[in-house]
Length: 172
Image 1 (cartoon, rainbow, N blue to C red):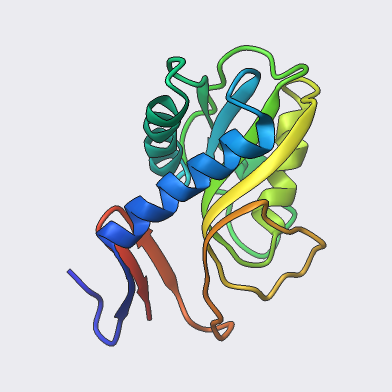
Image 2: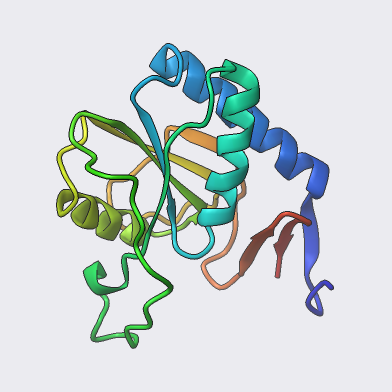
């Protein structure tokens, strides 16, 4: 159900197509899926990483790409500003040494969650590369972070809220 005053900016089909397109871009950039590991950021990126994993299996046809989930709550730099609320458990598929890690999140805003994720990844190995996939890039970066794969660039005000679900993307 849409929040009052919210407007849908992507339908469920748009989100599905964006995930499929991102999957194709990942395969192209990495020359297949060998060595690719998907890591969904808790909470919003995990379901997207799961759908991306299924999409990659259809595209590349070589089986499932390893999939993990990463909670960055204790790595954030805004602990004094907002309370630490662990999203869920970090569950990674073994060491990340030498892997091409694709961090997956729903929305890229200030870049601070991605910065925290990069710190957290360092505790789990040394990836060959780290790439970033998001469904929505809304701008307003506070750090020099740019996504490699984007479903939609969505200009927003700093006060608007973007919600990404399998049912679509809403802006309120």
